[in-house]
Length: 76
Image (cartoon, one colour):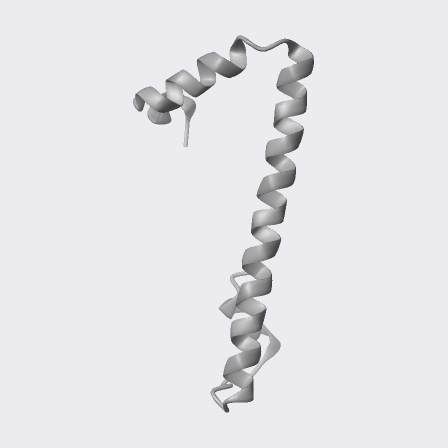
C-alpha cells in the first residue's frame, strides 16, 4: 500500500504533516516507539492465539495432523 493511496484520508495527512514538522531526532524517536508498540501488539496477539489453541486442546478440539497444519493455524 502506498502513501499516496493512504494519503486520501485527511487524518493520515495531518499525522504525516505533524511528523514532518518534528526534528529529525524526534522523528527517529517516534519511529522507534511505534516499532516497539507494533512488536508488543503482535506479541500480544500471538499470546492470545496460543492461549486459544491451548484451550481448544484442553477441551478436546485439537485436530492438527502435522506441524504445517499447526503453523498454518497461526499464519506463521
